[in-house]
Image 1 (spheres, one colour):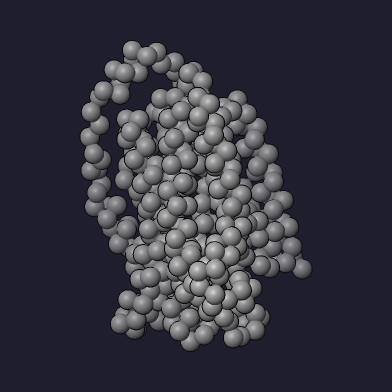
Image 2 (image 1 turned 45 degrees about the vertical axis):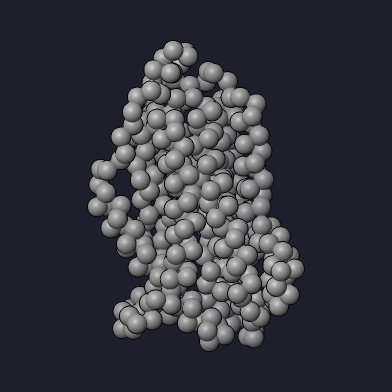
Length: 332
């Protein structure tokens, strides 16, 4: 999700030195390959456990989180390992979106001869079974055009993969037959999902309305992928949106990041308490953006990529991803 690089001094790159630098052969990263594979296997396990619970509930006409036991089903699934395979539609969908996002960064980093690790996929006891994925950039980003391409490649790749899965998940979902109050967690639908729902209804007239839908596990995974895309495109720090912002307006990056942190605090009070955590994350020193060469200026064509980033950000945006999870609700 975020991409950590060492703090460096600004540099100017003339054409000759740049061509010489890009001619250098970049070896494929094999360091700690065992760790990448281990984390991937663990994340596949934790997301499959959550997916198996979602599939069980879906088959019984229940929402994803209908009881407290659905929030942490690991012990129950260990007693019934034969049910784990039912979680693969969820886990493979979510991992496809996460890995396509990070591999988008990875491919463009290598294109610009920026040393990058393979993706670290992070298992976690969250509602999805993962804390997302990250890559580690081990060398400097040469100029703002490279920063733009590397930063925006991930969200574009993840979003493109999420769209067909969302469409499929919508068409596989069915109408809920229980009261909304029986659902512990209520997911809100961003603009992208509402637009894809209109398309799904045209392709498959039996697709239920979003406010009366029992979501298929593939749709839940797609929703998570879309939300992660939104989080990454927040224009601050070392998030993907922060990279895009720095590429377009490097001198404004620090001020905009401070404003965004303040807005996240307000959003945590009035919309979703989780925004307070994101505000705290952006305050960490590791989230400070490293300096990248101001010259040469960002080409006009790359500025259109910034417009595309804003469009994807707005399509995926949801200030209240979970209904009634606000700081005000906890203080009452």
